[in-house]
Each structure stands twice: as C-alpha cells, then as structure tokens.
Image 1: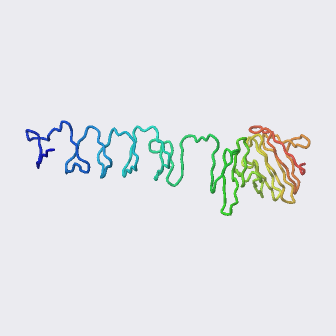
Image 2: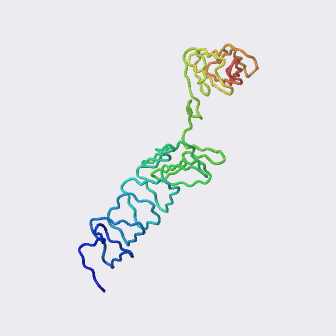
Image 3: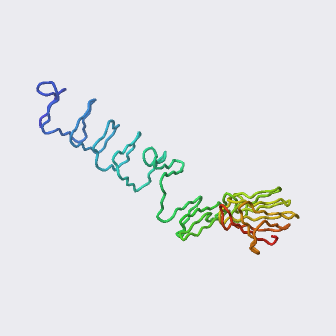
Length: 278
C-alpha cells in the first residue's frame, strides 16, 4: 500500500479543489477537520452530530429518535396533524386561529372560545378532587378539605336540575318573594311582578294599565291596622275573584291578597283574590 504525502492538494490547473472521481474514504477513528465548510448534495450519514446547526433546514424527512431542542420559534407552515403519545406543554398558552381569533387557553388556565363549545357526553367542572357521574350533562362538583363532597350544580340528561345553594334572579331567591315596602300612595310598576308589596299605613295602591304581562302575579299585604284601598287604573278591569264583580276594592287591615294578570298589555284584565277583599 502506497502513501501520498503532501501539504496541499489542488487540481491540475492549481486553481481549485481536486475532483475525487470515486469519492473519499476516511479510516475509522479519523475525520475531516478544518476551518472551511463541507458542501454535500447527496446523503450525509453520521453516528452522531455535535455542535450548533445554523441556517435553514429544508426538505427534512425521517424520524428523530433523540431529544430535539429549539431555542427560538419553531414554525409549522404545512403541518395538518400533531400526534403525541405523551404530554404537550405550551408554557405561554394556546391560540386557535390567527392571533387567537378562534379562542385562547392561557398559561394560567383561563379559556376563551369565540365559537360553540360542544361535548359528546357531559361537561364536568371539578373545583376540587375528582367526580364521575354518567347521568349528568353538567356537573359542578366540590370537595372540601374534610372529605365532604357534593355536586353544587347538576343538570341531568333528562332535564332535571339540582342546585346545592340558593337560586336567584333579578328579584331575589326564587323560593322567597321579593319585597317592596310602601308608606305612601303607590302605583304598581312592572318590577313588582313576583314581589310582595307591603303597605304599612293604609296608603292607596293603584293597579295601572298596559304595564304587566299575562301571568304576572303580585301579593299585597296590609301591614298595619288600617285598611288599604286598591283602585283600578284607567282602562283596567279589576275582577273580584270571589264574586266576579269588577271595580276598586279594599283590603282589610292585617290581611293579604293576590293580583293575577289574566290579560296583560292594553286594557288589562286583572283578578284579585284574598280573605280581606271587600
């Protein structure tokens, strides 16, 4: 086996690199070193790679079997699916659509969706602990530090709803009448529907026209030792439910009556019933 010893090798014209017609083979344990670059248009195979990879990498295919760490931004322009068998960590959150136009999930756990949120079986919100209730469509579940647990809100697939606390609307708790205490003459308003209007000094209550909606109910209480006159407003027909007569009535002291709007709007038809009506 012969050897060629030379400090420099160039082509015959001494103006470029020599052409290795059949390539070059480096013995095991040796490498190609130097300050220059290596340009390869074919396949480069190595048992390992050490050092920084700079520039653009295009046309890459195959499988990465080790760890891949990206210090900057990793951009996918044409990826249609991401398949992970482990955990995907998004430290700063997730955006759906351009700049989160479709929704966002922040790093603190707050989620916003601009479209419709659908669930195939149920939506379950666990404030603490875990919960499994196959009958519930929505199940908000709480477990305190003492191990006491219960559904605070549960809506079942058949439409049944259970609330552990107080259910309220704009008037107040639904099992309790809202209250409006009056000490002077007063004309009922739409917001009185579903409330108790208590009159503490015998002032007059007027039932107006074109204010209430069909089905509205109001309870009037005489809260003192004085009778309470209840007058029908213009275009209102106020029927006494005990005998069918219409007109203004009087609520006796310390008694209660109920007003039911049978036909709301203009020219209202309203019924009044109670033990102290005369």
